Image (cartoon, rainbow, N blue to C red; front, side):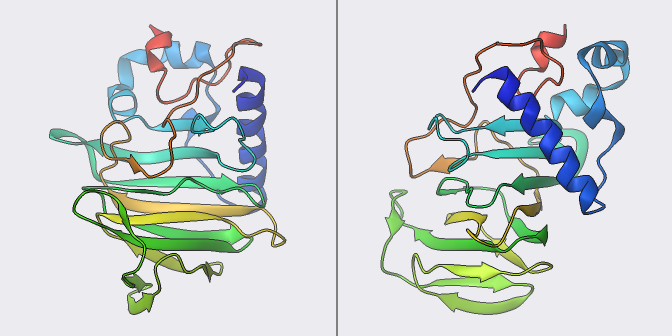
Length: 226
């Protein structure tokens, strides 16, 4: 992805969140200069990878498979730092989705925070890590136990949520024709470096082409602030 595209997406995300009265902490607006000025006081932010996270998952088709995320709060696995839970917000363009994946450790609620309609597909993971294409999936939706067929597409309206447990493959995105979407995620501690298992051949973080000056560092490139 080009740096200009990434920074354009950050501006878009800020606009749609503001439109829906969803406000981010002050460091969401920090420039590189402000990050460096505050470096003595932000160990928790840096070590728990809070902040902006934009990726096309290495698939080079961002508007189809990609996401801009902002991690609001988080901890670090095995360390007494930050919080013992995490929260993200994920604005999605209409028709955009995340790739099919599961987590071995993390439990998360995926929430439609507003805007459009969220669609989702679920599969159980087999012991070898492959999807079970046949077995129905038992899942809690806002605390109500429901059963969906493997790969069956269902929708989640604004305010609704789905609880994703470990080893449950999931795909979610903004339903075509229903507008842009704000997805929320509330979970146990999030570790994007070790706890993502993708079925599709993807990479978690994007390769970046530096075509303009860095304004908003991403959570996986805080080393550039030194």
